Image (cartoon, rainbow, N blue to C red; front, side, top):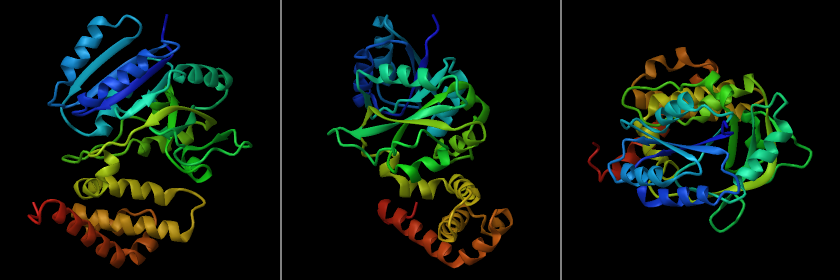
Length: 302
């Protein structure tokens, strides 16, 4: 029988915590899923660990794909291309799913499956059981991806129709840049359909030192073309204030400066007037980013 869900875990040198993911999947009340692990060039014992699980596991399929290190977005591209189930969920290596995860997914999906929704959103808690962010108002049943954090701020978990993701992936990539947040493509789902919302929780998040949340300033510096693309996307979002658009332009100018394409910043901007206004503060912010990264590298500037 075909499985319902692909749980996709992107990983890079996370063997020390990956066992928690496996154990939380083993505790599920239903095994109507596959686990797809995309290893983004790990140099630890991840492969050996996963091979042992594959050899002994008979309740659910585990698939392991190793690829050259290229960043989370390239792992996402591989996973979406390989997924062959109805639903797709990113199961981060620093997450733990409660035993009710599959039960919640199946019951929630049964209620919206025949609608035009491209998936649904659930809430997240930290390892102490505290809710991350806020709940959705009871009168909100669906939302667009671009709007959901304004309605209920904080990290969320997303369960997508795989066929919808395949329509908007793969993500673009820039040579030498390893950070491009997949939400860049999730925004494109708004053109296909809304997301249902629920205040159910099955994802416990344990933010790890060295993860993207903890290295954003370095990623900003090392992946400026990717960040510039984000800002152009944010500038196009409807119903945004002038202050919001100006802020995005400041970041956009800074990214263009770091990417060495400042001369094309205005030409490539979807909001050229704001970009001109943002030039000076954008240059100042680029200087702050450069200084912060010099400090992190011990003042070497390398």
